[in-house]
Length: 112
Image (cartoon, rainbow, N blue to C red; front, top):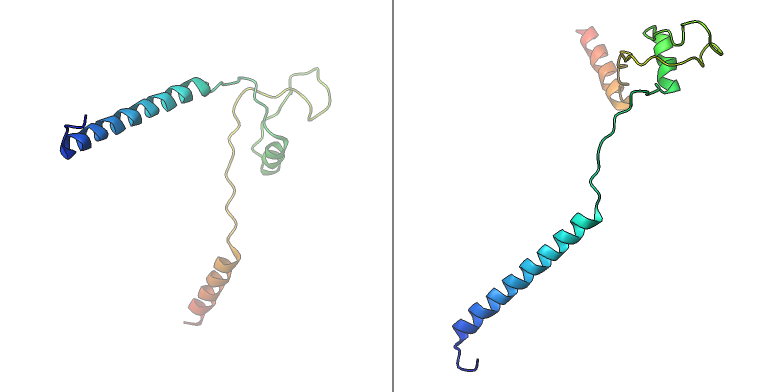
């Protein structure tokens, strides 16, 4: 290979570099495919509503009666219904600085 000119040497080295990069990329992608198991989402029919949300629903009056079909244990410890309960989103709290600005605007508008 001593007879090759600089151009041929440059092209050969470029091809070797590209081949090495392809091999490394293929190796890494194969490793990643083998290493990571495929995650699957599983749905459950028997989902219990968290206690905190149940309390909020009871306070707001949107909770459904749970375990109301006769023979059960304590009042709140009955079986949960498999129906979905509509949750009403609460109003987000206004940040302190925004509350101050709104108060100033309200006072300013009342003077006019």
